[in-house]
Length: 287
Image (cartoon, rainbow, N blue to C red):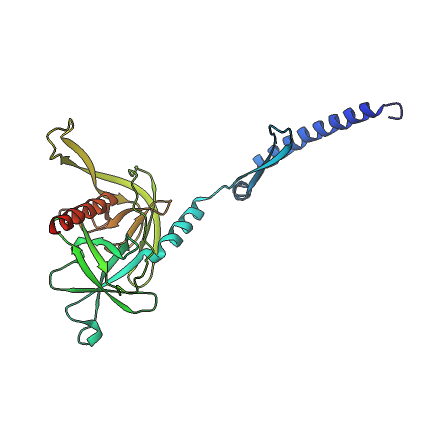
């Protein structure tokens, strides 16, 4: 060692470091392969950092930090529920003004707030002629719901939370998914009569129907569209309950299908968009 020059000492130190790092990597891989599954999963969820050295045009050394966050399915579910918990409302029905105390309100189902001005999508089978509908806010104050669209034979009804025009409230609205559902895709259900109840599962069955185009110029006059969603979610479903994907987007609403004996079917979010388009068309014609 005493006869080595400075350059040789540096090279020796680099060699020792290189051999040590290789040995450490081999030992780490061996230990990871023998570690319990729970330990490996915990390590995989740790935030990893990669540091790169980049030489710019001015030959100044810059340090760029890249951060890769490993997100678990549990984290996605929690985030989706937290994101949409204020977009779920409970709908009550009465044949008179509940503030007068003449009749008690009856819970009929849930609804999803789909716009910041208070538009609500729910199961069309919950709506009956001549009844008044209400919901409650965080302060347990009653707000009346006006029926914007409830057409017999359709699965989705559109309502609106009535408010003060001088002091409008901006509501937390759920995002409607525009992506097609896939078999086996993970989904989250939010329901519950008195408080939110959350269950998870996968899309187990997708039923489709044929749609005939009214445009004779199209080359594909008949297309298929998802008509109902069946899941493996183990829950006591509440009509109007929300079905979300792991991104927190609304993919379906729990609805009653009169032509089916199954009680766990959801109508797809495309039906909500179709109802919105039909409402917009009718409002244009009325102007």
